[in-house]
Image 1 (cartoon, helix red, strand yellow):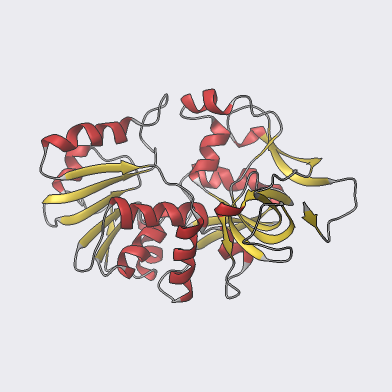
Image 2 (cartoon, helix red, strand yellow):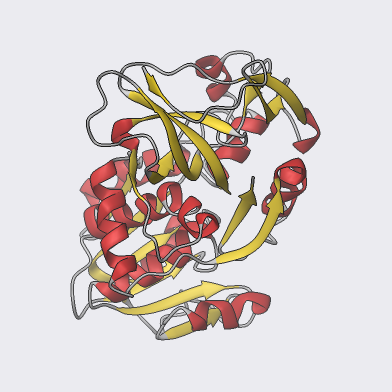
Length: 331
């Protein structure tokens, strides 16, 4: 392992750790050992981190099936999205060197240091703050794979994004626009101006308008909210349109995959294409997003920023549905 510039204070760091599953009350600030890195990993001095629904699911242990895979979260450091500076590299690492500024996905990013695999990181753009860079990977890659791969969005199509004001939704709107689609975003009253500000062609306030009332049909519907029935979603589609189920929201407490299973089971029997996907964090997709951001076609949307000690409050805001775009953590 090649290192430089590491603090000398007994190899410890401040981090948000989790003991047990439940509400944000299971999270606490603690001093823990800095992580060791494998040959294909780098150690990142974390400057900022991002908050996403996946972090909430890991904290809550929902769906319950996740607990079988994760085990007991004793003193587990929370967080995935990160941006920071490489301070050590494993012997097999070739893409990064000490001193490089990076963004991507790490293991336990709500901390002063985090280990991250080389293939889950990309170079940070100088034009972005660390907070902006830290909120790209998880939500941005999910949106990219939903719009480009699952939805197969192309120029001239009409796209409906349900949940357009959230972390994935704000990226999905901008990506669909970048691919040449006419985009309608669905959100609540308080977030209409936010959704309009990111270039959405039309905004529907779901408290005042029904996207499934028959007044409009869409070639692609991205359902990020997870609360609408399949019959309503299909009514919003053209006869051969595509429905993309994004994430596990509304998918059941035990397995969390009820809606994706429903989509795959129903799709062979209808003319419309009903699909779902599980996002895979790949550095190639992070670099695609990096290029779109550099070109001015996509901009990370941050609604609030919290210091490390206030991660529990940030997750409470996310759970309450108050988040606008992404929530960033400054470290």
